[in-house]
Length: 120
Ligand code: AMP
Figure 1 (cartoon, protein in one colour):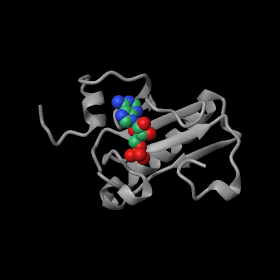
Figure 2 (figure 1 turned 45 degrees about the vertical axis):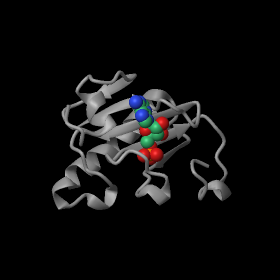
Figure 3 (figure 1 turned 90 degrees about the vertical axis):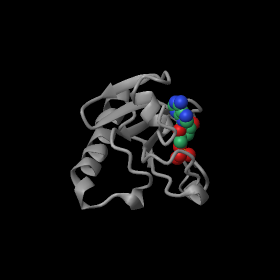
Figure 4 (figure 1 turned 30 degrees about the vertical axis):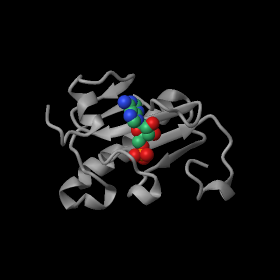
């Protein structure tokens, strides 16, 4: 096993089980193992970009794909009227898995004033 593999790469290779909701040639969508809201899913690009700031122009289409996918997943899960889309960038911002991923959280009440807390 490649010890540099992220946990998400191990999920994609089938090493670690997950609740897969969607996949295409660029990304997968899984349920978060430790949900912070009734709906908490992760959109994960197949390519490992450690943090958002490590993305470059070559990832532009992929980043657009992930944003569009977020909207589609929200519609599919019936939470398109109210959800939060979160990217933690860096350990001090709460990033624990260094393979870019987008969190969608929904079906709980979000207060504007809570925006700066971990997941509101
Ligand atoms: P972050 O803290 O932004 O890096 O988010 C990493 C997320 O990955 C956390 O919300 C974890 O609960 C989630 N996570 C870690 N391991 C797994 C796993 N095996 N399956 C699903 N989600 C996971």
